[in-house]
Length: 245
Image (cartoon, rainbow, N blue to C red; front, side):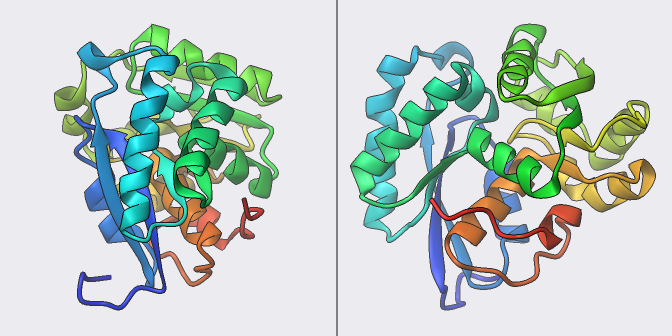
């Protein structure tokens, strides 16, 4: 869609200040009628903070997106939304809802919604993160009842390195992780280009492939009542809409 289109719904994304991929991907892949808007927060790397300190900033960012008519508002940082488990994720969503009076989602809740509609309980998980951050996601999945049958952290050093990995490299990385036990593959991180190769990865792996920007676009659009086609977003795009928040 283009900025001149009259949107049927607007959704908001709260993203890390260093993220360079969520916005262009939201504009490229959001279905017709769904207009994305973005607010940034310093919350990763040198700016990482405990959840108690982060929540007031999330609430303020959410309120600004609500000013633009966004509903739902999504806290879109995979690592941060999973770092303190389901309890931490619920607190983030509650902060958004309290600030906006509207609906909230996080990358973590969108991930779980996508896995649920796909009927996926066994996954391969790959991320660009350091081992510490990657293990937060492994723990989150285990607590949620998702079996990780294969996993890899690339150990990259931040946004410059994340964004330098091209779609073809993600295809090769995931091809090497092929596992017949997996119901789906999850390429985690909102600041990577894996979304651009979803359909090729699905062809090679013969399973649904999820990645953070794709599943958040899907969740936000469906929550906003936009149920049209989502070209380029793979098997998830054909799945049933998630339950309304």
